[in-house]
Length: 357
Image (cartoon, rainbow, N blue to C red; front, side, top):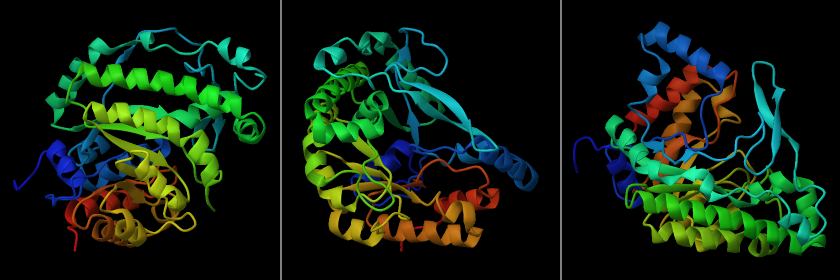
């Protein structure tokens, strides 16, 4: 093995459950919220004479790529599914929360057919090779395409409470929304991956199926209304030689065997603050068939712990999940406002230095 691997080599080896020079590091479905980013920038300038980009860029191993959007222009806050969001303040910043579900009033399959569904023709896939080349010119990154969030797209359009009622009362509507969402994402990734054969390593897919205490629906409901559509999507992704990295927050231990069965290669987020989530069990029971990404708590340790506690959690995740490869380290979600910059630095410094024991 080379003394120092490229990011792409490092991630590829980890996903083959092989040893690497250090644990791969990524910010998948993550980031640093603006107030925390500003505090980190000031801290790094003061303590090390560098900025956030100069600090993080050499450590991050996964970069995103995708086609240019050339389609319909929407009003501010409206996305291609017709979902509208508005900023809701949390004090130091704001999140964009859904204020309009365009399928909320749909009663029939004809109502669904009348909706203005997005088209893959709204994307210029011929730009993907240039996007890959730009990323490769920076570093030999592991490249990831996004977003493939099937059930989330469905409930964003329908409304969360309403679609859960539909699961029991109007399953035909749920299946038709899921079918149409899946048709779009299958065609999107088929074109995207075909545009740069062998160059895109991961495809990010998602559906938050867990809450703090357990799954958001029963396993039989998940098996009927969500899993088959991801099976179809994942099959296309795998046909192009890419691996599937799947995001879900929350307590998802009961669903892990089904996630493996539906074609997930990497389970992402790893919210160990949720009920029943345990790193030792995940590695012992599923680590031969599944890789992992995330795992450093943005719910407790990063915002409220000490730098020493953060470093200890990072070392534990590497020692447990990174044993014999199979792990990409990162925060479990966005690093929130108010997170001490010393804790963020402890995360990345420790990840860069610690080797699995």
